[in-house]
Each structure stands twice: as C-alpha cells, then as structure tokens.
Length: 322
Image (cartoon, rainbow, N blue to C red; front, side, top):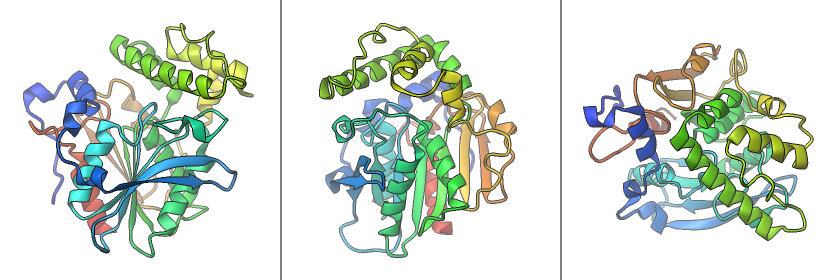
C-alpha cells in the first residue's frame, strides 16, 4: 500500500475543517473490531506511577506486530483519531495498544499527582513494558499532537536507552514549541473554547477525587490556557513560570539529531496550532524523515468522503519495513 501525497477534495482542504473532523465522533461510528477485542490494562512504572490502556489482540497469534497509539493533550485512548487509526490497523492484522497519559481518559484516580507534559519517565517506562512483552515481534509507536511530542522524546531517549522490539516511530502534528502553540490556541476562539472545556472538566474530576490535595476553583474561570497554566504551576509545582515549564518539553534545533530508531514526522503547512516554521529549523538524524503536507490541519490529514486518515497508510508502510 503506497501512501502517496495527500490530496483531499476541495471541501475537505480547509485547515479548520480538517482539524474539527479529526476529533469528530461520527468518524468513529460503526463496527470496530479493535474496540470489541480490547482488554483494559494498568501499567505501573518503576516510580509507582500507574497508567491505563487498552490492549486489542488479533483472534489468533501472528507475527505482524503491535502498534502503540498515544493521544494528544486532553484526548484519551477513546479519542476519535485513536479509535479510527486503531480500527484501520487492527483490520490489517496488527495488534493495538491504546495508552492513556496520566489524568487522561478514565484514569484520574490512579495517581495522586497531576499530569504535566514534562513527565516523560512514566510514559517511556510504559512503552518499554508493552514493547518488551512482544517476544521479538515488531512494535510501532505513534503519537498525535502532544502525544507526538512524547514519542519524539522517547525516540530521543532510545539513543541511550534502547527499547527492545521498537522498530518504527511516527509523530503526527507534534508539538515542538509549546510556548508558541499555547499562544496559537489562545488566539483561536474555537480551538481555545474546545481546550478550556476539556481541561476544566479534567481538573474538576481530579479535585473531586482528591479534595484534600487540590482546589482548582480559583482558575476555573480563567479564560486562556497560558494564564491557567501560570496559576496551576504557581500553586502545584516548582516551576516559576509557564515559559520555564514549556522549555522542559520543547524540541528545537539539534534536539532530535541523535535519533536512531526510524522515525517519521508528519505535519501540515496549515496547522492552526503548530507553526510549520518550527519544523524547518530542526536538525534531524539520518533515521528521521520529515513529511510536510500543504494541507491537513492539526491531527487531520483526512483524504476522502470516508474521512480516513492519510497517515494510516504511512503506518502500514512502516510495518512493512520493520
């Protein structure tokens, strides 16, 4: 299966349409054998952090491999783009593990501490555990948006701490500079409304579960992501500002130059959240391939009336190379 270039019909080309439809529930309608086969799993890191996920195995043993899918900020293992991507891969004989970041999906109760994007160790350890259990079958790791940032940092760490069986990494619409991305979200009325609603809901769940630890009432009415971040960090972290926090997971200049695991980065020139210029300033390794599409929005890359993700074919090609 050749991925070719993304060339959606004219009505599907606008960045806003691509971005909105990426998470639209209607794309996940219909039978999904991956979901039917899912078994809930809790992974415990070396530091005692627990992360949840769903493993979907094929009905009979095979050697095609496993795909680990990682959602974006305030998404989950049940996000539309995760479910549809998993359905596509599962229908082609691939096992699928959908991993939740801390405090995403129905996982707020698993840890007292709150989610920060700098917390790479627990995600790296979860991916390591999943991958090492595959008994020499190839593993592909794919992440979207903030999840795309996480998988690039995992690729970066693998140069020093290799993960057994991890053969391919794919990063879709990754956040490279969260400081810039935050400003873009705050300056887009519809995108800002979407993230504020989801983040407030998540914080409310955490506060209800751990009322002795958290009181987020003072920030619930803040009307932008940057100021919410500033206030949250001031009260519940050692960071002195959002800018210093963002630096902890920024990927710029030579940060990805040491990657040795074959890695594909996919972004769009019209992404409303991630500036395409960030990618042209990257100095990547020979193991890294950068694909910049003229359209696709954020997490979109939908290519036809069925609203399938073009990047799904890239993933199948990656399995063929593994």
